[in-house]
Image (cartoon, rainbow, N blue to C red; front, side, top):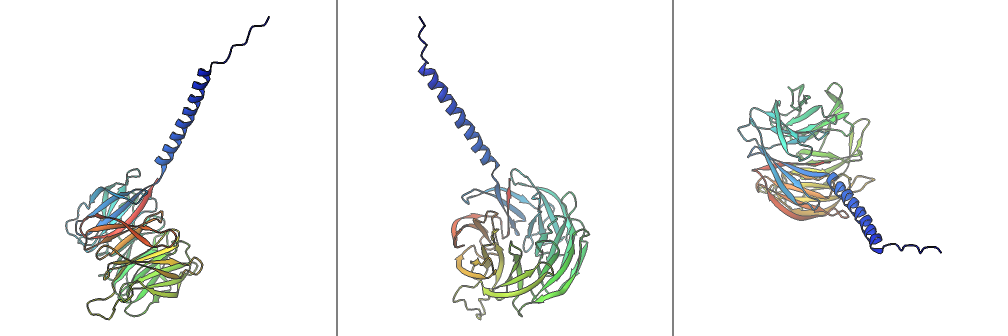
Length: 384
């Protein structure tokens, strides 16, 4: 007679099932935790002219900012009129331009995990530079002198410190911005006082600038071309004019470096009386979202930010509207995700963060934060 088979113990099966579920959940948590740990951390660097330092903020996914460091400029005693900043394409070095004598480029190493800055060294600049930018290879620093009416090119040495100027080129009156084209083949310089944009061919292998053909593009008299940005697609350029508050849209020919104006609009709010002696336009900064859908410009007389929607095919702008911001907003920037904008005020010693509506481009104020004294430059950086 056969023996009856033993019944499986329900408790053991239940425990085994629970253990399997727990193991799966634990593995999922590890994966989620790993995914979160690997998400990019975003930092904002604010140049403060009167306190001679950089405020380093860490930004959360919700746009909240936390001050994590105040990095002083070593070897600098006197404040300058502004503090232009630039970050190398490999995200390893941040360079600040000092506009008090001796004119210096101060280099900082960027910690790849914490975003904090550590001083690397100081290099020479050819003059008081209103604007600095780094070429796409990360080997050269471009700079423009408003008071000296010149532009310059310096090598960036292997240790991240800026070397002696390799070229110093006289320009028309009041050079203001000096930036490379997306493909690094050309460099363009605005001359605010001469109402023109100079063009240079750039040899990145030798670090040499030569006059373009044509060498200059003229804009309307007394418009004051100041800052400009390229569309991420590379087919359009947006030029901000300080003295009349205009934004001009140009098609851009990457092969020849030619600009061709197709539209002109304004940063000024409705009802602004540009003929008033105590109320002149004073446009300052311009930036475009990484996806190229929205453009923004700041205006200092009204302390406002104006938003525009960009037509993807034509490059033309439609005005979305303006919002009040920090007092005298010389600078602002957009974070790499294109979801937030941070503007600083030279006369408010503060920074306000806005959420960018992903459908309309409209700005919604989130929160304001204290900075150093006379903040006038913002750079964003996301680190893995």
